[in-house]
Length: 175
Image (cartoon, rainbow, N blue to C red):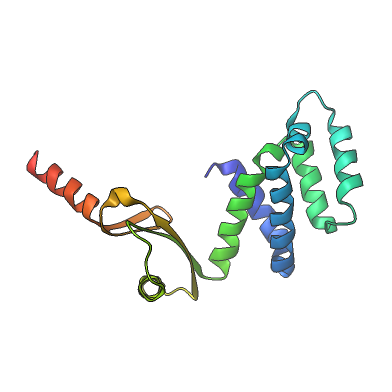
């Protein structure tokens, strides 16, 4: 993740640390609106619209629904012409929230949908391995892996898929 997003996320995280759950929900709601309302997003990122006009609209629309810190953060992003990065800043912010709460975030990729017991077994194995307090897992079905399980945690990939083993074997044989 680029440095700009990380820096803004870290600064906002430090500011919001005392009320992290409420701030996370507010941030999520704002990013949801930003991502889903194309007209609003286009208005905010349009270089032809004056920064004062953008800030005035945001103040008028969000003053009653956002906390002072969240509103000021959005206004800062507008004034620094960084509002287009708000989804990525939010992702970096959530990463910091999960890191502080010792939550392990992972993708579990299988060829077929796993039963709940199998999914929980994988989650528990990695929760224990990483000494995490809890796990947030996204289950992804990808028939191209043929069988087995592939787990992605941050930049680490644990590939126990048949496709991965075949690729490793092919690489070994072609040497």
